[in-house]
Image (cartoon, rainbow, N blue to C red):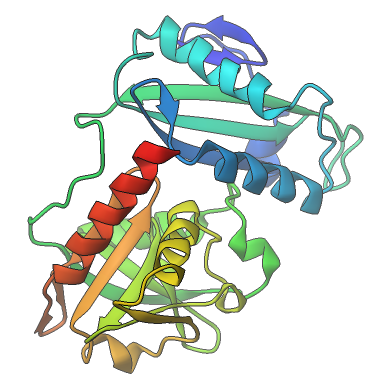
Length: 281
């Protein structure tokens, strides 16, 4: 079952058509969230990012789109799918209503909320091999649009195909200045001894929710130093650890890049802190 504009419908119901602007032009945004024990992890951050992104894209934000309203809509479809007490993945998609060519004739929006079950309630660290490579066929354009979670994800789609064809678990994307920006499905962190770096938003990386949470955690401790700055591909093989963050996995350690293999000690420490923070929110 899916929630379309407040109505619960079967997944195979035909509720959008060929004029859908998300389909035609990628005129759409989405948030992917983890739910556990009847709580949306970091819901306020997801909500505020969504509102800011809608304003930037000049979408009309309905007066009803309060945090409480959208949270209730999420739990409506979780309940319909029997997941209200379970660990679940939720995708909330917002798209501008039909009408117009590139220029919309209607700035109002519609929404779809989808859910699927997850196996574990909180973030866990996988110890499975996780090898990555640079994807250099296409580049991220380092501007504000690239920091938004829009449906314009062709580079991520083609990069995912490249990774599968070549036996990698993920790829790292670069921008036009040949800086490392992010992974296909999340933000990148680089660890050297007790110093942690992550690409800045100016590099074009996604303004990720877990990225933001980790930076907040790092800012309140004195074990590690950290900075948001440009990351060169040459730094990757000199690092002690590389890991990826996103809202569903939390932290995913990279075990190998080219000939270099990595540890995951810092990732384990930060994952414990992230889980503790998730329980409090």
